Image 1 (cartoon, one colour):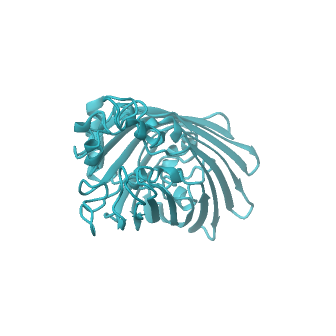
Image 2: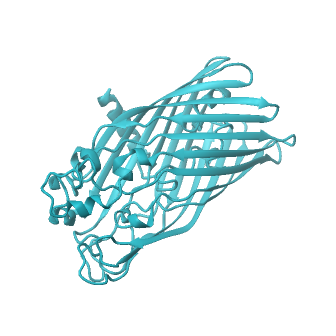
Length: 431
């Protein structure tokens, strides 16, 4: 099975699915599928294509026999950090400057296929990605030697999901669905050698600059959808924590010796259809980053307790209590509106809002993973076609600039500001 997953993943990598999908809601995408993205990710109760399995597997039985194939262009630019001068003698100061990450454009495909088994059941395959911890800071700057004093610094995390979904109608108004999720992720880190020089890692040979490492695992997603009154449909889904194998090449970086499971999520929402062939959708989504130590463990007091400790220590990088990114759980509110102007055109707009997951006490490590986005504004449309291709879909997303400023806990008064702006365009076809 492991060999099969790696072979499938390698094929999909060739088509670019493993390009990083940047930090929008932490490192989860703001939506999945072109129509869903145009509604700011809302639609747990509004199935429209074979990508609905990524949001609510119960919706697959309502979308029919279809294939959806799409490609997005994503730009998290600019993303940067700026450090002020430290106040005095510091344990781990950054060179005072503003630095922007390289690598500004990424291609992100997706694929979904749904088969009708009988009038009440379908089985589907949905392929999509996550990611978000991608930074690429230059190795030399005005007066420093890279961000952390060890050359070019950054991380690259990508996640691939292959959902096999069974969905079934309970009656004419209700359905349920379940997805088996096979997950593959790869990661690399560079420029973190200074943490080893300060004896802050339990395994300095597996801390940084080891190239890509991969990790595989599985999880489950379950969902329900039901029309409770004429025009009003409710939906709910839950995805379990995805159990992943460790990143062995980075067991001196991530807490729990390279552990990096994918957090559980939940979504509830509604869709209301108006008489004039328009719909309003509203979702609330939760992402449980606090369950993943490598993501949620704060920098301090662990790192301060590591200074001078006898290695191995549970407080040092790679230990059970080792420092992570300090991310908090997220709750995202998503609102979308869809309307038809003719039998050939459907239009969509959306807005989502959340509090970004990085406390201002955690800015030092999050230079590597500046997942600070909060608002998403979206627009899109569908042009219904004739012949073999049935639809052309388009979506545009803009996430306004957000920044977070906090102290470098090892920098004697030094302040660090993280900042990012994002946009994405995506198109897809259905047949």
